[in-house]
Length: 112
Image 1 (cartoon, rainbow, N blue to C red):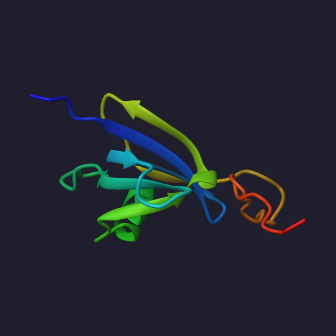
Image 2 (image 1 turned 135 degrees about the horizontal axis):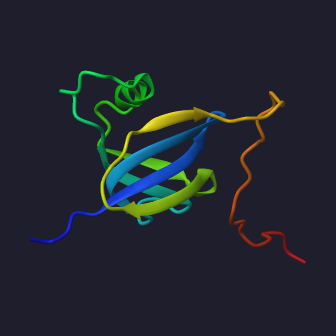
């Protein structure tokens, strides 16, 4: 039996850090985006529920595939098993969110 890969993907979204687990991560869908498929969440039979994970389950309910801008990705790790998906508030005294800057910029289109 082939090993099942699990990836922990950490990315920024609207001033928060998202940590999700997925079975498939690639870069082939759209240029400049990381494609995440088959999100993995904890078992629903658990007695103790993590509100952060429940919020993520609701946010990604019905999502087959999601595309994260490459510049928003903090880290992608291949892990032995999934953990608890969570949303973490970013620390900082500023309430200003930086405007996303492109990682790759096309060459100049002006003629000389």
